[in-house]
Length: 237
Image 1 (cartoon, rainbow, N blue to C red):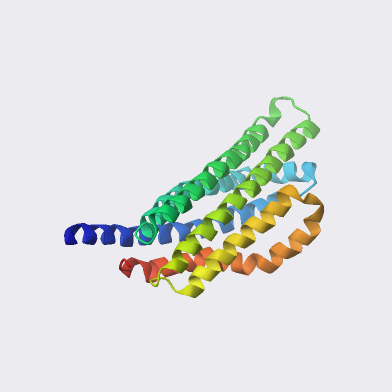
Image 2: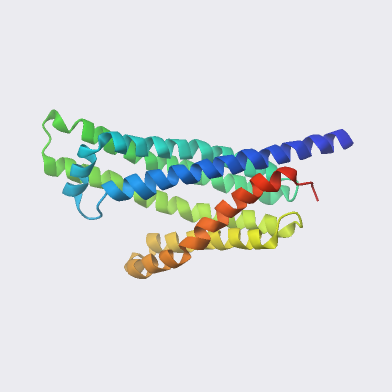
């Protein structure tokens, strides 16, 4: 029994390390892919300029797609790692948290497939399709990516809420970390629920997202840092 407990504890600690490293790498990949490349190439509501930007920086756009593919792989690692780490604290919620993250990752993969389509459309543009048609196809694909990803972030927020709930129930994880994770999850789900289902409040939602950006970032990232520093030394309740 003692050997089994030690083995489970070692697995839990390794899961903490792998999840933390995946989260940190994912953060840098997301900052590059979404924060830098996507935001600099895509002009909302301007299909012609967006097409022109991507055509002028096709290599950079492909790097964005690569960044998202890396994020998808890392998300799968985090899904499994969170399940293993949280399982000793509450097996049922751990499975729910891992399952929600996996579902989000599937949705993200579907969203990113539209960026792959965008790249294909741009590459084949010289085959005689008019610029207006190509621009609209590109914008439609990018809009689909953003809409599907936004829907996925509702699920992602629910995942964080469950993770925070499990963390709150154990004395091994600081309450402030648990609270920040729950707050981040609530923020993600609320903002993207409004984006998806109450689009007429888009201006208000944009302001709300700006206000909640800090807790959204700090919540999961803070948990990742804690996992790397303290989680790898945790002992089961």
